[in-house]
Length: 297
Image: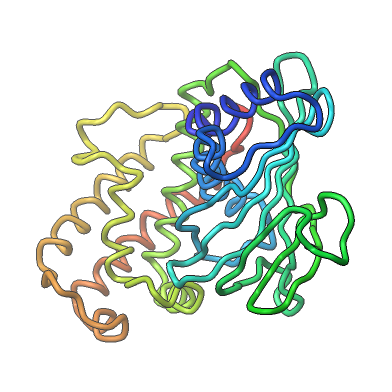
């Protein structure tokens, strides 16, 4: 949430105070560039974990704000495109960022042209989104152009949440969120089927590399020397982290630098050991399950 406060809430708050009602900025403006970083963090930290329609194991790899407009005294609308799964595909987004008073902003996220088959974000190539440039559409209605085809964007609301403008999340809340990410990692590492699904949703990703590298995203090395919240993590969970890390460290060192295909890696004795160690750690974490992302336990 610190990332969102710095790169999304910060510039949005500035724009709500600096822009006149009805005034807009386009992509090249510094504030739009800052907001692009915030939108990327929003999809990675919030949307993919809190919207049921997000495709499992997919991720984003860049967001671009095309325009931001102050539409009334309290609301900023931000429009742009987000890349998905490192494959050159994109989907349109629209944010309504509203100052609701009491030191809080409400962020409502819309995604354009949802995939009718999956209910998730579309995967568009060579898409361009413009504001009010269609001869058939009046006003500032966003227009999506793909090749020679133009259409008004059909927005679907996918998530609304509130962020305090100033208050930083407590260390405990941060620990709860990290704990949930560790559980998600263990679910992936402990299931060959989940790894295959990951590849299907992110075909450009090399899944064995992801399984090895993602552990370090959430767990300090070595974990035994880290400071852990003894309420968020029980003694047996910390033991499970340490035991899994020992296996992970040994497997990571034993694997060749250039990993083979997923099927070939899954046939390795070391990969089976990693799966079994992850399954054991995941079973320990599942005794208490996931913790809330937005309030302390």
